[in-house]
Length: 267
Image 1 (tube, rainbow, N blue to C red):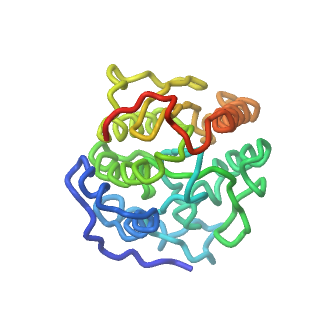
Image 2: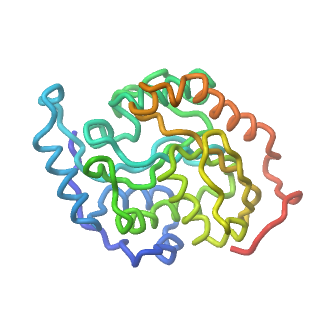
């Protein structure tokens, strides 16, 4: 069922942190994302795609709005992608759902024990994530899969909000692709993390640890499971499994409910 996008009053200046700090629950964030119309180019594009549709999906009712995160509400692992696919998440209303990138990611999540099903085709398919949540640097499908710098900066308020609300339980942030890597680094800097200058470079399999007010969090980079990367062999199933299995192992090793052994920084 297509959800009509509604105006939101939560849009703020580019940094977004004041509004993010005002959001009390993850449900607030998800509702704000669903109603966001802050970027005219993205709104026009996502809604045009939902009307024109791809021939294979001509009978589908496209979501056609910004797509919120999906998964656990108190995750240990947060996976951050680029943006909804025009005929994937923009159609189905769930990130990484209904396209080949999602097929690749969910199959890997299933193999390493973080998903209940090896596929994600729609919001009613019964898929569940274990200990894991998916989100994106940009929550609207962008033309040519390329958000502008200003669009990414504007949408960064939602990533700020999610990180603030989820930080206490997070062990790992898995970042898919260089665009999302820069978005996550920018968000963490806005939220007061002091160990990210100079910015760590993106590279598949690279680790970087940061200390938030709630404890130490690992940043783990992976190539994005785009068709360009998977068809050419730049990203293989084994490489994707290794990254997600590493994330699960880091989460397993983190002490539960006690961060007294890690250095803290002020919020």
